Length: 356
Image (cartoon, rainbow, N blue to C red; front, side, top):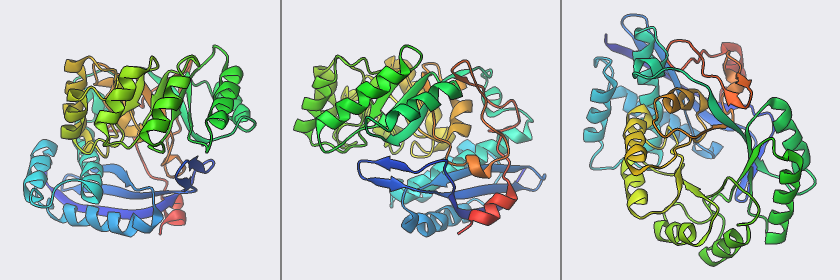
């Protein structure tokens, strides 16, 4: 089976509500939809994402340029991945190029599993199973977070992750306590600082949160400050979570060596797609680290089924407004789609509406 064409479509995908973080607000999700066509008629689908709409044209071009390097090749995702790493060795595979690689790799594996008429997890040798799911939202204060917590419970999630990083710790604490009170014992609470704190401030806030019963504290300092993360992880009782900014498995390997966290949550795109995820999963397994996902819930649901130390799946549905299949949340668990590949079919009317 040969790759004949790869279509890239930049869109500003709709979200149920804006995602506010300590560094800015995402009103629509800038995505590049990727469709890999083969000479057998099989089409693999995925998307790449970038947080800034200003960078969407650059990402679309990067995906298109990488795609041009693989047209005519056999649909063998591992071989194509190795080929692209060799071709781009002098430039490196970080930033937009790594993002493009990750999105393209997911689309190739989707096509590969579709050609076998199996969900990706099953094609990888794993069975489908329910996954512990948490609702991932933005930055809310003590008043507005209550409605979000109630919505989380009504939707049947096992957990809620809110952003943190208000100007004062008192505001963080008030929001956390309000969310905890609203959730009760029905759901876990996680917080995400999105790299917004200096090391001294992060150490002080994380220590002060040790008695709040959080499932984890995520990225309190810069993602590449592995020493700072390790010092905080060692100093607090609450589990420290990092990983969404691992650019390829080598960065996860370095973080594990530095003992930079208690938990890991690679991003299917940044970790270099399915190929990179499988390597990351092996690293987590041999290190005994619980492994959760970051966004990309369609691919992540399949991949977590094939991850020995799978923990939580993050539900921030970036592409939900463009996709046919609805999410299935039952008894706090996400039910992966039992359809070929990763299970995405575009709503072409919505794609046309939000195309840039």
